[in-house]
Length: 486
Image 1 (cartoon, helix red, strand yellow):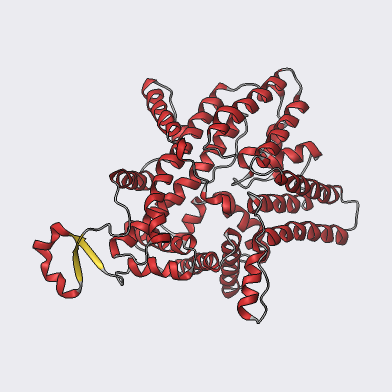
Image 2 (cartoon, one colour):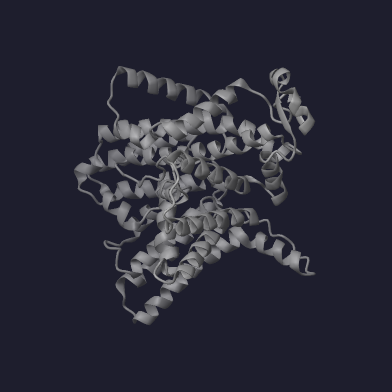
């Protein structure tokens, strides 16, 4: 079930909300938790009921392993072995469902074997579920999980707002909120106002901005045989903005839906395209993933505790895994390694006395991020190179026809004049959306900052009402969120 669907907005969410608070008001707190768990399983199995068995198996397995780790009835060596078994079990499922065809394709490429692809259906949100479960097991082994019971664990693992695309949460962040005193489980009108505002801002981001920008990004990446300079930059920037508004839109909706139940999830985005350095970008982009890779991958690898060379290798190894986690393809791995190299270069740069002006630093950072997203989006290396060659002007440069009288001398250098949109469909609405998206991403407060400062008044109510109505009226062209396939 999609957040951006009539079924979710007008049926599932209101019914789940009403049932939860009716049960809590009657002091049936266990029943209220059970109601949320059952609703979350229904939410997950809405696309395909078989997914319910996968989710249930994952919950039972990790709860059992976690119980052994928490009670520490075995020797330290046995506990370590159980942790390894738990993590390996989760990673095996991830590898089987998400990477098996990728492995088979690469085996066939380097050998004479001709193994058949399995074409396994990927369970939704498996990457996010895996990281959440792994974090839980590690925290359990460290003694950081308390008040452990099956209902609480099920609620932690399946809570529907964050189940599919995060944020990636820790057990101790969310379960204590469900175990709060009864007065915190009753209707909170402040949270309801903030939650609805955040939810519908996220819906607007997804439906009006991200889906509109796909009208330029998709033809440029998927249909065009080649791209001129302007078309290539429009293609790459459209995807850069589409991805941000699509993913942050989902996260806003997740945080907003959670607030309706008096649950605060961690913020996942903090205006990442304003970043002045690549390090700052990863502190602002997908913040719960950045926290996970720091605490559960980078630091266990050794972090920055060893030599400078070892630290740089740890950074590269970490972002190799980050790229692989995002998708079963070499383009994702290249994207991850590009960010790893950028972070390594930035680390070395910090050791010099040289510093760049703020605007130059932002420009370099933003353009690197934009270029790297090309590998993230492209289906193949040739597709990525098509866009990058166009951005470099190697596939031709076309300027508006109106410039011809003033710049005709440029024709000697292969510059042409004519229609800028030769392979990408021109739409004034998409251009307006493109400009609006860039301004919002770089210059305006983000959704969480807006909601924190929200002061209800008639102007705010009218503006939000217009956003809500406009977004809902455009739900007829429902598209999945980009991160669903990860």
